[in-house]
Amino acid sequence: MKKPLLVLGGVVAVLLVVILILPFAIDVNKFKPTLETDISKGLGRQIQIGTIELSIFSGGVTLNDVSIADDPAFSHAPFLTAKQLTVGVSLLPLIFSQKLVVRSFTVIEPEVTLLRTPAGVWNFSSLGAGAAKSAPKSGGTSAATDISVEKLAITNGRITLGTAGGGGARSKPQIYENLDFEASDISYTTQFPFHFSAKTPGNGAVKLDGKAGPVDAADASLTPLEAKISVDHLDVAATGFVEPSTGLAGLIGFTGDLNSDGHQMISKGAVKAEKIKLVPAGEPASVIVNVDYDTSYDLKHQTGVLKMGEVHIGKAVAHLSGSFDLAGAETTLQIKMNGKAMSVPDLEGILPALGVKLPPGSKLESGTLDADLAINGPVNKLTITGPINLANGKLAGFNLGSKLGALGPFAKLAGAAGGSNTEIQTLSADLHMDPDGMHAQNLNVVVPSIGSITGDGNMDAGGKLDCKMNAKLAGSLGSAMGAMSDIAAFGNNKKSQAGGIPFKIEGTTSAPIFLPDMSGMAGGLGKDAAKAPINAASEATGLVGGLLGKKKKSQ
Image (cartoon, rainbow, N blue to C red):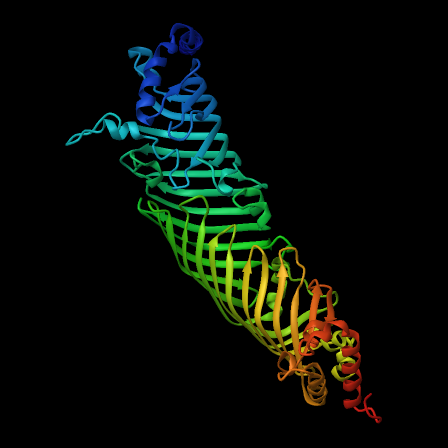
């Protein structure tokens, strides 16, 4: 028994000596020119290697200080730099035949710069162009197209995403860290499985798992793909894809499927948006917005179609359809949004995101909303237009009558309105939203305890109100209003403001300020009206008071 053990021990000792001696016996740096040339041809990019070390225990060689050039049409800076690139090689051919047979690549702590032109072309698109150029024109296969790697791994990488040529929000680079990528059996002729994960700006995370290939040697961005994607805690403001001045912010979660044949990509999935903010004066929404979608995207032309979209805010549902265009410096949208009988209490939580904050202590307790809106333009400068209609609404904790009652012409309105709530029978308006603010034109509100209120409401990008309104009071209040309008129309054949009482709303939605509109009230009085607005208001107040039940005649 001792003899076999001694023999085995001797063999092990010899192997250990060989392992220790081989790194010194074989000068792997002599393979450097060949390796640089072969990889450069395969990638279609110039590669530079610092030094090469033989790593017997890891079964390969280590390349230090690796640099891969960018497409010169994009940048003269490196496309990729890495501290180390470990190449897994077959040791027996290397030892006995001094032949380099590559099995795997492991890139350690690489830094990659991805650039996209305003036309939508990526700097990685030309990777592998060397393989395409070396392919035979007819029949047979080339060495380049036969290149295959058993395993490719990238650990702890860093990606800088930017725009070549400048222009738009994309010109500001975004950085993705802790990038890990692993793929096996990579080939220009077959499909291969892969896994990708990275940390997004703002401490989010993105993951892709699936299959890709065969690699498109002419344009790597057109490589067919089947994958599941998952995005968590994506900070919209931190991504750098939108200008801070737009006010767009929030946290996005996303799960879906991606399927591409190299020409068209089909994507289906669900988006979850939290704490979203849509305008500079807005505050984070208190509700979660969920979106289910189905899109098709033309990879070459960078355009897509939203075949189906459903926005869920509580029980409220709106339907989306339209198109989008990623070509150019900015992503542009042409989307239709239609919602029927949407629950207003469920929608209340989204109002702060639009810069609309209800007065303290108030809330929307009931009502339904119809909206038919068009969403158009660059994502940084969207314009939203279309009609909205609210029915059977109730604003609890806020009495519009009492607020108007503080004005002279409405002196008796506060007592007549009663209660602490505002019932809204109907509300309709033509909405227009853009970066300058929100505009509600042709506004028409019916409040049973008051009457009808018409006008135009405006809120600028800073949240300040500038609304010119006209109230046509109901019942006995309306009779008083009509008499007062006769005074306002003195010296003119037409009644002021179609027989209503003009007033203004300033301040903010959370602290509205109601003011008499003297210019509107005295609009029909002629040139002398502007000289005595207080007298006009006094006469109107007295008349309203007398017609509301005072026993003595009005002044």
